[in-house]
Amino acid sequence: MQFQQLLYFVAVAETRHFTRAAERVHVSQPSLSQQIKALEQELGAELFSRARGNITLTDAGEALLPLARRILADTETARLEVQELAQLKRGRVRLGATPSLCTGLLPDVLRSFHDLHPGIELLIEEGGSHDLVRELARGALDLALVVLPLPTPSPALTTVELLREDLVVVSAASEPAPRRPVRIKDLRDQPLVMFRHGYDLRELTVAACRAEGFEPTFTVEGGELDAVLGFVRAGLGLAVVPAMVAGRAGRDLRVTALARPGLRRTIALAHRSDVAPPRAARELQRLLMASRRRV
Image 1 (cartoon, rainbow, N blue to C red):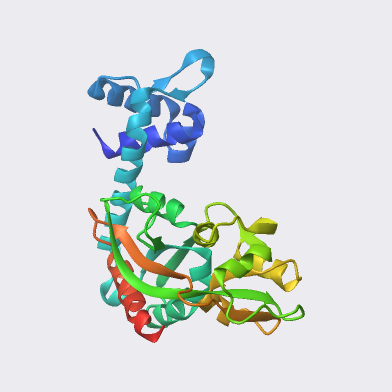
Image 2: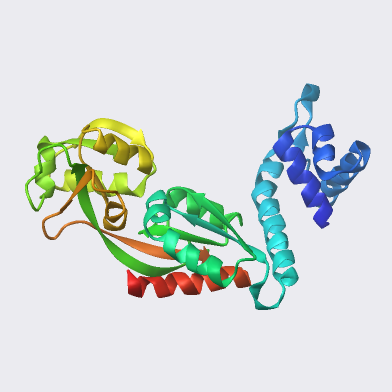
């Protein structure tokens, strides 16, 4: 099995077209087809069904695709690691984080990293912990900031607790203030602005309300972080958000603490257990771990 064969296989699997796949990888279509056929012969199974011009993956192809993607991603990581110059003068880091962490924790840390290593390219992907874990597993990210416990524990990932953060209630400064501090059961009669499905904050808030014996009432749901804060500013309801986000939200939002024991979330730094992060990613990891003392 050759690297190029896996590259061609993934190209066909993603384009579902031999000619377009050949154009993507810059080879002739006959050469690509020949290499795919050689790969199938070596594996002893057909990878594609070619009925009436429709290219679909067979069961064998479905099984090979995630493995091939991982091999290609690991090869690219190795290539970049070897090519990095001394003293981290160039390279890249692929970091995943939840939207609230992109707003609250990352700006200061990334600024420090950029000041130290201006030649390192930073690629940031926002998403929920479930999506980020999947991207880590397939080799599309070097590091990810996720919320523990993970939605689906994975022995292939290493997680290190970074910090624990309080959640607070935000409301429009122009609206009547909620009681201080807010108890979870006080949210029973309050309209809430709620994040979309897949947000860790949504799951935490809904679970806390259910533990108090009620289902929360949503005036608006389905937004991303900035949209949720905008809806709160407009007076559409309250929202439960991380304290770091609330601290940057501006004077038009009122921040109210939750009554003890309150709500907290645990943030962890995750990476694949079977592949060491590239050198630049390890440097960013060091800065992130140091940031927990400041937070």
